[in-house]
Image (cartoon, rainbow, N blue to C red; front, side):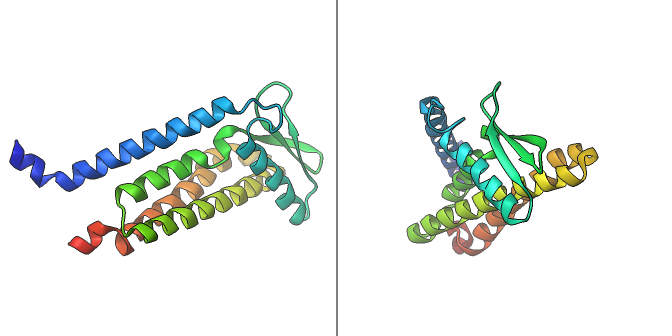
Amino acid sequence: MKTLLLKYKTVLKFILTFLVVYIGLSFLYSWYLDLSDGSKFYPDYITNLVAIQTESVLNTFGYYGQVLPHPNEPSMKVIVNGNYLGRVIEGCNSVSVVILFVSFIIAFSGAYKTTVLYVLSGSVLIYVVNLLRIVLLSIGLYHYPEKEHILHTVIFPAIIYGLVFLLWIFWVNRFSKLKRSE
């Protein structure tokens, strides 16, 4: 049994580190959501910020974008040129995707400074791509409302998770300690 544990030490360390970081960050995020009472920023600060930035980018792209608090649920309604197209909910703010990304990078950590810089820059990139994804989804729904299912459930999740996967592959091949020890 001891030989088996030594043989898979790297794999077990990765899995354990990933789980500890993922559960820890998820707990902190859940705590943040519990503390977000919605009185100042509705539904929570980060989701509210993503919605407001979505409106700004839509307006920059030449559309008349508006985001308004949804009266019946904790979300922000997205309106483009007077048409209600959808809503920005807590799950749209990219935090859960960033938590997944960060957990993997820390589990496959490299040098401390490199790991911290990659986590920060990768998280910002994920946030920006997610924001652009919401804007493009809104524009797509405005022009092609009949394509809602494929846009929302296939193409746009593929963008964000595809980016995370590419960032992971780049990290493992360029910076992880595992790569250097082979």
